[in-house]
Image (tube, rainbow, N blue to C red; front, side, top):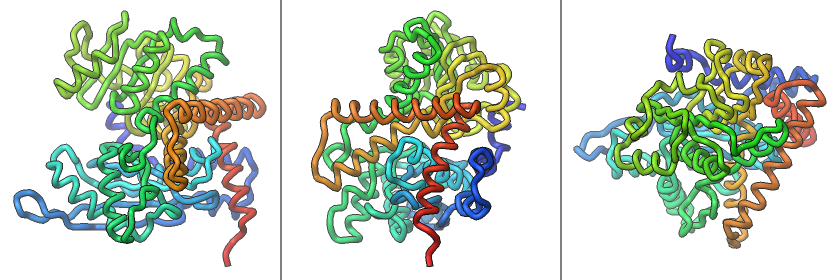
Amino acid sequence: MATETIAASINPWHVAQQQFDLAATHLDLSPGLRKVLREPKRELTVHFPVKMDDGTVEVFTGYRVQHNLSRGPAKGGIRYHQDVSLDEVKALAMWMTWKCAVVGIPFGGGKGGVIVDPKKLSLREVEGLTRRFATEISILIGPERDIPAPDVNTNSQTMAWIMDTYSMHVGYTAPAVVTGKPIPLGGSEGRNEATAQGAVYTIIDAAHHLGMDLTKCRVAVQGFGNAGAIAAQLMFAQGSKIIAVSDSTGAIHRPEGFDPNSVLVWKQKHHSVVGFPGTREISNAELLELDCDVLIPAALENQITAANAGKIQARVIAEAANGPTTPEADEILYKNGRFVIPDILCNAGGVTVSYFEWVQDLDRDFWTIEHVNEKLHAVMTKAFASTLDMSLKERVNMRTAAYMLAVQRVADATSVRGLYP
């Protein structure tokens, strides 16, 4: 069975709950707390009309889920994808709760999505869809309530439309309602690179722990979108050899390595990494199993499963994507000595700088890129060290360690606040 078919057949919500259950068992959480943290606080489903360019009306379905708000307002991206489902959004919201907790920022977890292939819409249609979806979820979002951000197939322009729509509703400009905005609207320096930059900080820490020389490491990146492309560029700048990258059209491989900056130029011109001179085309599935030192999954969920985990050769797997590895695959990777930097730690740079952006918006005080990266580095390094300590102390893999840290922090906040009324 192809990796894509296996991934489609795995329910991400069941995976997220399974990961939580494992940490809850290690922590010996009370039955009541387990029940509370195992389910989302709120799930909103909306069906909304959009007038298309040809004058017809289409109805789209969207979701906004808030998992847990004990540590602060909900935080999480909005994705536009034809395969979005409520269970996927619930899983992503839960992962955001743990992600915020593991790096110690005062947010809860939220997520949103619309079932749509935006590549089939005009820019005007995407704007109309975005503004109407923002109106539908405006009953939940707000600077102190729920703060969306970019995700798959959304970007700073999408956030600008949401911010403007929300501001029109409340009657004043409210930049802190979203993060990942353009700089002129209150966006933060370094936000676009934050997910990749945070991931690379954790890779550097992992390499130091494992005694690896990054200048001698071969790197494969699955998903050459925003996070994957920037991660490849940053690893290249570290002196690593980029031997393979992929996007939704396919993958390219060259054992001698290539310059990811040149691949990015090629992709912008040809809308695909495939065909880049001097490389051979392989599948996304083959990329995962290449002989390399560092594998960076930066695409969608459930890419590394029980079916292919035993064939993974990379020593370090740095999860720039959300949920790329199933629980069954985790056991195989751990047994085979693969060092996984779990998603809720590895890609938390994005939400960390989103937090910085939110703080800057509320304070009306904006920071330099140097200040942003200095603070991001401190947060990621501290979170990595805490997770590694837990892993070694409890003799569990890095994901379980990260979950134990995060779940305990959320459980403590939930428990101390108590049940209302």
